[in-house]
Image (tube, rainbow, N blue to C red; front, side, top):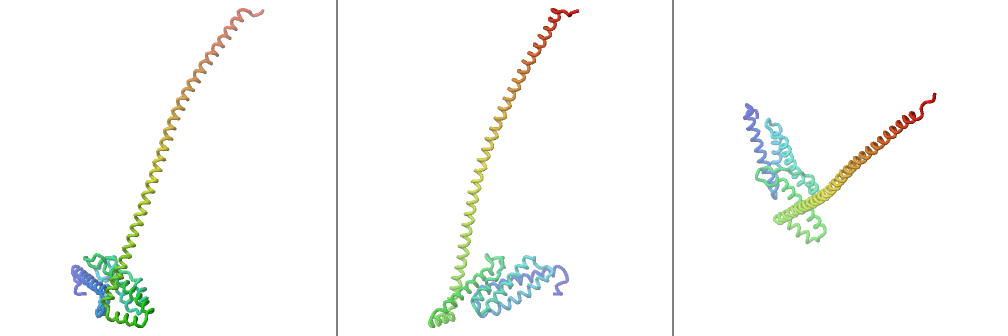
Length: 270
């Protein structure tokens, strides 16, 4: 490693080459894990050990991948390790329980994968464990002849196990497809309800706006009528005040003239 650390370009090339080799080996391990393993099982364990060493080297590299990529790589390596540990268990129930806690990768390892291989391996392993549990349950309740036929089938029938695994995988995929369809129907139903509630609320708001507009127009009409009546009352009040003023002037004038005449007619006594 020190011979490649003379300049920045060599370090970058070394790190990128290490990551490419890691991705190739990871893709190979996932491909082996997706197949029915026999003699190649020891190679998968060795390959996973090499993946762990390369992952440690990637973390220590100067031009290491992003934190998200390192997390995804670690997730996939841990999944392969857990898969190997689960296969070493003796009971199908323990295998099924161990597989429940496995977390496959979230992104494809190579570009031409439509679906992450680790997810496919996870579903195949679940289907295989389910089939083994079913065979174990059926084997406990049948006769010795049935047991011998089952043992013979297990010894001869690798194609049968593959067909069972394929059938279980198809059942799992169909179950997920049904769940997705049910979820889509529920979302569509919720969307329709939301649309209906929105339209109902819109109609209520429109009616309230119409009622408010009518009330405002009625208030404006009442205000105009009140204004007109106020002007008429003011004019009437002004007219009444004018007549009273003229009446008082006439009364004062009459009183004044009467006093003058009274003085003239009855002169002051001496």
